[in-house]
Amino acid sequence: MGPVVMVFLDGVGLGEADAANPLVHPGLPRLAGRLGRPMARGWAGEGPGWLCRELDATLGVPGLPQSATGQTALFTGHNAPALVGGHLTGAPTAALRALLETHSLFARALAHGRRPTFANAYSALYWELVARRRLRPSVTTWMNRLAGLPFRTFEDLMAGRALLWDITHTFAPAWARRHGRPFPDLPPRLPEAAAACLLGLLEEADLVLFESFLTDLVGHRHLPPEPVLKVLDRFLDALLEGRPSGATILVVSDHGNMEDLSTRLHTRNPVPLLAVGPGAPAFRGARSLLDVTPGVLQVLDHGQRAPAVHGGPI
Image (tube, rainbow, N blue to C red; front, side):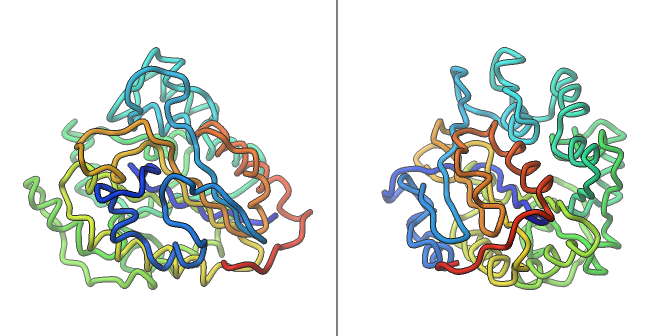
C-alpha cells in the first residue's frame, strides 16, 4: 500500500457543531469541501480512497486525556494511561519512555526494514535548553531519539528538508519571544510550500511524520483560531492535492481541546482520524488511539502488494 505521510495535530477533538467550535465556525472549508463533512461529531464516513473515523482518546481511564500518555498510546498502540494509572500531561515519564523504546512506531518501522523520518526542525537553542533542563522533550522527540534517528536542523529547514511546527514561520517567532527566547528571522513559507516540502521527504523515507501543536495553543487560548485554521486548511488541502498516487496521507490527534472554546482544558471528545490513499482501508476498524500505529505498520508492511486507490471527492 506504499509510504505514509502522517500529520499529527495536537489537541484536536470532534465536538458539537456549535458556536464554541472553531473547527466548524469558521472551520476548514477546503477540507470540509473535499470530504463533504466538517471536523465535528458525525465525522466518521468513507468513500473511494478515503475514510474518516472518530477515535476514543480516554481509553477507559477516568479523567481528561493528556499529552504524555495520549501520544504514547497513539505512537505505540499500547494503553499508556492504563499502564501508568492515569492520564499524564507534559513530557513522558521513565515508564512511558520505556514503552516508546521498545514499541514506538519508529522503532517498529525500523525493525520491519522501513525508513521512518521526523520532519520537524529543531534549533540549537532547543537542545541547549534541554541540556540546561529548561525544556523537557516531548513524546515524539523521545520516540525519534530512542529509535536512534537523526533530528532535522534549522539548516535543513532553510534548505527545504524540514518543517517548523508552525508550518509558515509566522507563529513560532512571537511564541518564542513571548517566553523570553531568541528566535532567528526566517522567511515566511506558504502553507502550500510547506506541504510540498513534506511530500518531498518521501524521496528519502517511506514513513514521514510531522507534528504541529498550533491547534493545542488555540485550545489553551494562546493563539486566536482564525489565522491558525486558514493555515491548516491550506496546508492539508495542498497535501491531499499533491499526494502521490501510491502514498497514504494520515491526519490524527491525541486528545480534544481546540474544538471547545468554552473551556481552556482538554476534553473527553473523540479525536479525528483521516486516511487518504491506498492504505485507507487499514484503518476501517479503527476505534481508538490504540489502532493508529498498528494501522500504519499494516500499510507499510504491505507496501508493494496492493494497488493504489483512486477516485472520490479527495
